[in-house]
Length: 298
Ligand code: HMG
Ligand code: MG
Image (cartoon, rainbow, N blue to C red; front, side):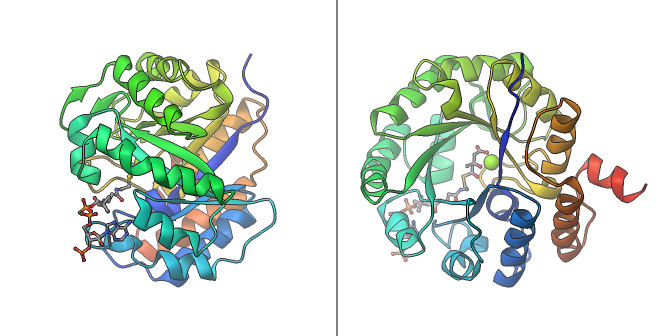
């Protein structure tokens, strides 16, 4: 019995664009957010409050957050790795902040320049401040099946990180396959490990599609009852600190599969394809989505 409804967080404006070498003007990012909400996305990861030296593409976080035309019922989330990030983000009134840790020590060091234990110490005051301000808190867990530096990651490491996230008050967590090496059973093991600390309603799947497994992994997660997923319109994305990792599963492909399964998403596929064309045209390439390609060639 699969869930009857799925909620998708489109992470295109954040995960999708953070790794783009060419500068993307704030107006284009704002235009992308607008098209995503017009297509029916109820959750959009807009930007991150990280060091502009580390991730130059997200340096315009404030401009973008100020310029988006917020729609009632849509949740706008942003990444905040530390108190400095939270303090900057707070001015721009996000609905949800995301602290981001890793199940792999090496990845934690490369991505956020500290150990897993140190990252939790940094996140704790951020989580506390956000919750006191009535802002929701999500925790991204990177490398839950594989790490670009350490290889396979055992489910026990995922359970450990999930426990630390729970301990500091993170309300829900993303099981992320950062480099897209996961296959369905491995992803199920990572989700089950997370379930030691979080209920299935508080777990979302975040699958990069590097090896073409993301939809299969999504189905495997649905079979466990997961009904929150992250994806990127036009298959944008990649993490600058995970070499070779390509985009998230394309939102268009995810929606098409869910529609075929009779699962409600509230998303208009045609308008979503238009959103993907908008950003892909700007970037000078075709949408990295099989469904978008098929529909555009029809
Ligand atoms: P650090 O160098 O250890 O930080 O970086 P620091 O506290 O020592 O500060 C050093 C400098 O950074 C100082 O500036 C700070 O002011 C500045 P300086 O005095 O040298 O001019 N700084 C900041 N500036 C703006 N905003 C901040 C901030 N914090 C410090 N929040 C830090 C630590 C985390 C900041 C850094 O490592 C960083 O920015 N990393 C970027 C991480 C990132 O954005 N990665 C991509 C997102 S995660 C992802 O994609 C995975 C995900 O999709 C799930 C998955 O697929 O796995 C979520
Ligand atoms: Mg990611």
